[in-house]
Structures are given as structure tokens and as C-alpha cells.
Amino acid sequence: MSGLLRHFTLPLLLTVLLLQGCSVSRANIRRADAVLAADAEPAPTCQRADHCAQPSPLLEAARQALAESTPQHPVHVVTLLGDSEPALAARINLIRAARKSIDVQTYIWDQDDAGQLVLNELVQAARRGVQVRILADQLFSFDNLNLLDELARLGPNLQVRLYNPTFHKAHTPPLDFAAGILCCFMQFNQRMHNKLLLVDDSIGITGGRNYEDRYFNWDDNFDYVDRDVMVGGPAAKQMAASFALFWRHKRAVPLTHLRDVNQRILSDHAAPSWPAPHYRRPRRVAQVEEAAEDPAWLHAWLVEPTLHVGKVEYFSDLPAKTDSPDKKRALEFTQHIMRMVASAKHEVLLQTPYLVMSSKAQHIFRTLHGEPERPRVIVSTNSLASTDAFAVYAMSYKHRKRYLKKFGFEIHELKPHAPGPALDYTLANLGTNAAILPVETASPANAEKVRFHLLGSRRSNNRPAPLLSAGRRFGLHAKSIVIDDSFGMVGSHNFDPRSDHYNTEAGVIVYDKTFANELRRAILRDTQPENSWLIAPRRAVIPVLTNINQAIGDISEHLPLFDLWPFRYATSYDLKPGCAPMRASNPGFAACYRPVGDFPDVALSPKLIITRLVTAFGVGAKGIL
Image (cartoon, rainbow, N blue to C red; front, side, top):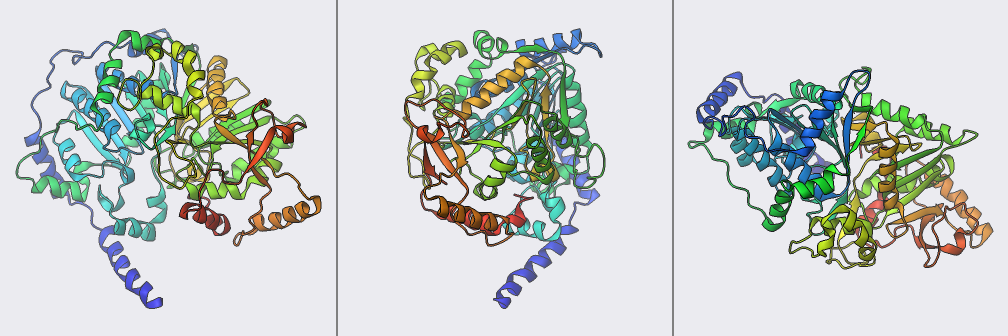
């Protein structure tokens, strides 16, 4: 075994030493910049002052809010983007309406239909003269040198930078990935998790969605329940200031400064042209493009639901916050979230994909639970059947008793075939060959009328194991908080140790009761019995044996390693037909809820086995999962 380790470790160490110092020379950067200047596309396609921007009621409302705002009395227009098709259509509409600038910041940018669509819209905006800047985290975006070469040739109106590239490269093969962990773990592990699309410094969209099909209900097998918020008004200036900090930071690297992209540019004898997108589902893409320009559709789905509010704040951590965690602003967004939760008096409603609490968050919730009039804490999160991050789920599973008893959490875990998310998928694919719905769903009001009819339907395509059941799978990705029905937050922060200490995060806080109630209803929909299992203490079948089991489980849970006891304090419950939903503390709970096991609907599989192993041995990785 030792010989085998030496066999792999020595080449890896040599790779580390070679890669660390291999930055691009200034001479090659100048050469690549000169090539791009020579190959740049001709003058913009539009010579008008507004760069042929299309009219947009969304951008116009934002400009009006800015005009009416004063420092003492800010005015904002705010739209909650829960349904996925309006979230995508809003982006397209704003990009086409931009007159001056578009800034985009994201964690993931894939080259599937959603990724291609948004990227092509940005390219067309740059061609007509709009200044477009794209800042994407390197590890999970644009992993294609041909694509980056094509983007680099589009001229000065389109600029792309990659955040925190591994060994000065755009592409990270497995060996580089391992070497990055070995040589410089803190920097390699720190990622830019912010999501932002900002147009003309007037209106922005932020939240949980990346640019990939599954964030917009376009994946055939696995899609996310996610959420953004669109904000126009003075908060957009905060967004612009935050983006500028990231754009100027040393970890935001231009394409010609990346070794592999630089080499590709210098080696190309003929400049590549921007190719037309090749969509897997062109009919579905055309449909959302049409919606983005349809005044009636825009009014029904995006203008009518817009709220006019006063105070809104955009918060973001500083770039590379692991470099200077002692700086007051480095963890600004994370610290503000903690203060928000600590101020709760009546209710904390939390939705997060990963229920893994940092030490500071645990202290806050333990303190709240010790108050004489403790606030109610409702948590919406993933089950093992709905998550794609099973190692993280294992840490949540390990500490269920702590969450229930010491923090007073009421935990609802999403079902993988929840009918609520299934309806949004159907609406996002309306009129395409992926789904067919009645014409009446062409407005949000009428869609609500058929919602209850559709909730009874579980028709869906088969999906792969490890579930016992078949059907399209949904996982929770939204990150939101509502405090005391008075204000709400939508952002990228997962309320876990990684978000606290490593990744940079951002989000919007809206201080408005109407917005808070709208966000509250959206989260509570995902906690309804048809959409989620309720986590509650296991019933005592034989009292003495149950007490012994819990005592052994307590000891096992507190062990840093070897937490192997399989019989846990709590399990999952499903509501029986004919019963009304209730809290686990209700005397009638046992009569109305049936236990369905710790991992309902999950088949015996490597995923389930690894979850058990991480529960037993993975506590040391809690902070970085």
C-alpha cells in the first residue's frame, strides 16, 4: 500500500510544483491582446444612442423608481421569481432592453439550452453596442476552450473573466483538481457563489439560479425548486458597487491571462466566428423568447405581481473573503443574516437545500429556543430522496436530535416527486413536446385555478435509481428566510458552514410585509404534506427499549467518528388521508401521521451506503461539504 501511495503522490507533488509558477508571461498576454484587437468584430450593428434597445416594462418601472427615490425615501419595484419560466423570460427581456451595460455574475454556466440561450442573448447585446461583462466562477463554468476562444474574439463590448482559476487555467482536469487541493486548499476551496444579472445599473436579478437547464425546469430527469428576486431602484446601485469590487479583484482573471486560453488564441491561424446556438429543444426555447417580448404575457406574469416597496438592501461578502476574514466587510452578508435571525420574536421560516448549521448559527438558534417566548422555527429542506448532495445530507441526518430538541426546529423534507414543483415543471414546458396543458394556464391567475386539479396527477417520466419509485425528480435549491412576517431575504447563502466561511454569497433583503407574506406562502407551499415529509421523534413502541436505544444513539451521535448506531432519535412521517396537517407536538399527531422510515423512497444503493458512512466518519468534513 505504501508503495502505491508513493507511486501516485510523487507525480502529484511534481505537478503541483510545475503548475504553481506557470502564470502567463506579460509578453504572451500582450501578443494575445493584439491578436484579439486585430480579429475583433467590426463596429456595433446599431448606431443609435440607445443601441437599438427593445422596450421593457420591467426596466421602465425600475427607471421610474430611481427617479422617484430620495436618500430618505427610497422607492423600489420588487418581483419574486419563483416560477422558472418567468425567471428566464425576465432575464431575456432585460438583456434585450439594455441601453448601456449588462453585468452578470454566476457560480455555474453550462452549455445546455438555458446556458446557450442566455449567453447568445448577451452576445447579441454586445454586438449592438451594449457593454457586457461576465464574471463566472472558473471551476464550474465555460469548461470549453473553443467557446472561450470564440467569446474572446467578439470585441471590446464583451468581456469575460473567470474567478479564482486553478493554476491559471480555464480547464481543470482531474489531476489539476487533486493538485489544487493538495497544494493550496484554502484558495482552491474558496468559490464565488454570487448570482447577479444587472442591467443599466437600474434593475437586477439575484437569488439561487445558475445558468443550467435544471435551474429553469428544462432538465428531463432532475430539476431544482429555486427562487430569484428582481429589484429595480436604488438597491441596483449597491449591486453595481459589489460587482465592481469582484470585477477588479485579482482573482477575477481575464481570458488572455489564462494559460490554456492564451495558448489557444495564439495558436489559432483563423479566428473562429460565433456559432449559432444548437438547442436540444428549440421549440421550448422559442416559446420563452416569444414570452419575453409579449406585452400581455409580461404584464400577467411579471408586471402585475410586482410590488412597490420602500427599503431594500443588497448585501454581498467581499471577494476572496478567506484571505481576510478579520475584515469587518469580508463577511458582511453572512453576518447580516445572523443578525436577522437573532432578532426574531415570533417566527423564523427558513428554506435551505442543506441543513448543516455553523457553530455561530447553532448558538443563535439555541439562544432563541431558550427565550421565555421562543419563536417558532420552520425549516424547509431536502430529503435524501430529493437531494443531489448526499454527503451534506448525512451531516443533517446525524444531528437531527439536536435540531429538534435543542433548537426547536420543525423540519420538512422535500419529496422527490412533490406535485408542487411538478406543476411548475409542467407550466415551464407548456405547449412544447415535453408537456401539454390547457389554454387557461396562459396567465398566473388562471394557472392557479387549475393548480389543484394538476396536483392530483403524478404522471411523469421514469428516472434512474436510487429511488424505489419512478418519475421525474425534484430537489430543493432555493435559499430564503422570512422573519416575523415583516421582512424576507432571497439570495445565494445556504446557511451552512461553507457559505459562512468559504464561498462569497449575496442576496436581497426586502423590508416589506406584503413581500414577506408572499415569500412565506411560497416556502410554506413546499412544506405541505403532499410536498414534504415531516421529521419528528420516533414513537416509543416498547418504552424501556426505546429509552435504551435513545441513550445509545445520543452517545453515538456525539462521537466524532464511528457514529454507527442505526436507530436514530427521529424519523420521517407522512400525513394519513383525511387528516389535517399539524405539528408534531399536537396530541393527535400519532393518530394522523404514519412513520415512513429514515430514508423514505430511497433504494439500497451506493448513495445510501455512502450516506451512512459519511454519517459515521465524515464529521471532520462538515465545514467544507
